[in-house]
Image (cartoon, rainbow over all chains, first blue to last red; front, side, top):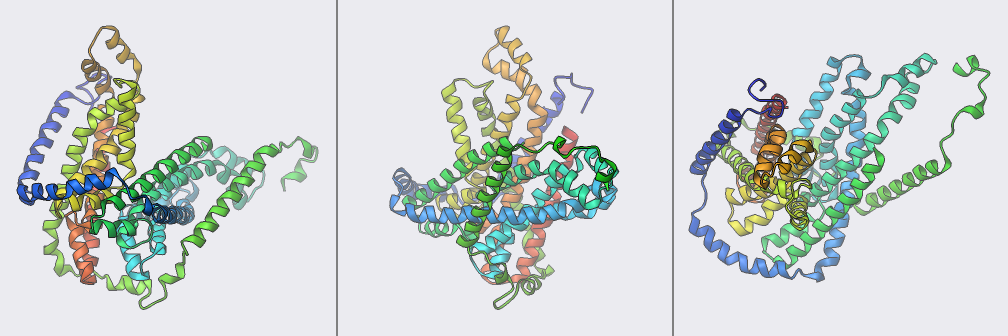
Length: 263
Length: 269
């Protein structure tokens, strides 16, 4: 990547032009080979759905507000428990994925591989499995979020642990502290603020996922939403959407403020 | 132990954390525990329910043993999935680019347009990709089209947010130099901003594609095309061995695309 450009231009022009042309060509190929319904069907569909959609979104059904608020509160609580469950499991796993605690990078490889696998496995598939096994309800959603969050949190946690200052650990060891004391007094205080901050960040992500897990029956506001989507009751759908957006925006704002105070 | 070797050290010389700070952490802990207790009650979370009932959790996992003879039926929806992800990333990127500069403090045209762009991006991002798909399916006919539009929407939100954070962090020197020399708005962006952010932006576009592949495998569950749609159909028939195979294929595809994308991004930055 170096050589062609100056210090200010690390990406060579030829590379950028080539990538742009290549991606347009690929787009044309994709659009030609993809099977889409005929255009007139889409147009007639739009003509049928857009007027009621517009009417529904211009006046949300406020009578639905109590139900929407209750469902979103459940979603909120699901996200809390899911994040916490993920946090506990990730906390345990992250030490098995941190090279500096295990005495060598290669000992951390199995732990790291598990974390990648968990992170890659789609959350909604976990939810489907838990719903099929345990029946519909928030428990399935919480379990899905808890398991899926391990991947992200475990990775961040182990990165944090690998980046800690060795000084306090050595100091406690030199003063005669045992392994447990090293852990409690040298590792934990150094990683706690970062852990808490990332837990909050993951909570923001989980609140978004919790609001869709209900689409497959895993509890929260997604359930009432998918029912109304099937019948295209737009004035009720818009109410539910308003509550979701409001919750997400407010929680994001509060959480990012807390995170700024933490780190 | 240590204290015996240090007899002269008076206990008072050890610093104690200020009372206010300790009170605050204690209060924080109480609040967190209370919220968790309420959450536990309200959701009636019950981990034991996984192992009760007709089939326990691990017994159920056993029924998902993949049926490999189903594999040929998977290829076509799988390709459609990747097509949806590509279209979503492409158009999402095209639309996000101007929004990046409108939403960044140092390149915004007017405070009002910056505010509008930022609000729009916040709303776009607060709706998850699967929800976009669920909303668009009743409007745009079941199939890949609502999926592609859903991913476009979500990509705009994510990419423009990441992009404007990058643009706001650039070295202001070249920007001021070009402005002082009387360059127009577009010229300033092309020659002062783009060279500084190009590598990072390409990396973010790849990252968006990664996210979109993950999303495109599941949006079919609500009717938006691709392999998720096949999964939904098989689930409705309780055809669990086919479901198991589809899950394995989805996992493999996401893992491969992730691997390629992470490798390409590591080459870029």
